[in-house]
Image (cartoon, rainbow over all chains, first blue to last red):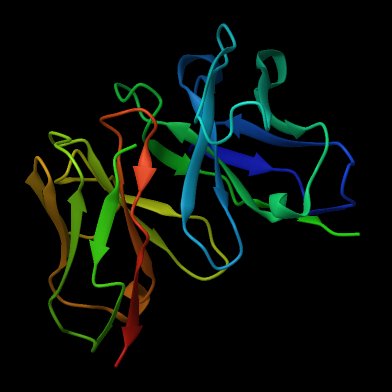
Length: 121
Length: 107
């Protein structure tokens, strides 16, 4: 059974750094793109970017390029999303998700439970 | 970016009703269209991919159709557990984009 288990909720102050995680199991982690989706409070879904854990090839949405960093540690089947300097506008739920084969990493068939990030002074 | 427009934005219906949600792309996306269901406080769940292929484990009352720019999600007979928000997503072009969502509520 495919499972994606994300790290717990975070409360941070503006300017702080943060790295959240997503551990995959039940499938060959290095063979599928894995990515992140943002959902701001009461809003819709936004595709942020993806990584191919086999070689760490990464693609970002233009909206998120330079704002976040996606990485992966294939030795522990875990993907990461990190910020170097958080803003209040980063407050959102963040979902990791596994991409379906043959979709270039653009369609996610399995999703994690979400990590709520709250940024407030 | 390709814009995905869903209609209606919200919908009230009763158990047993047949419901259709529409998604329109701002340019042709072949059949690279997915539908997701999201319940309050939960992660999105994939229902349909390639416009009309049912994800494993999804009940057969859900169906999808369309190609090019116009797509539909149909629920043939609403069940209590179907009341949720539904999103379409195109994955034909970079970056992938989602519709704004359709909230399906109990009448």
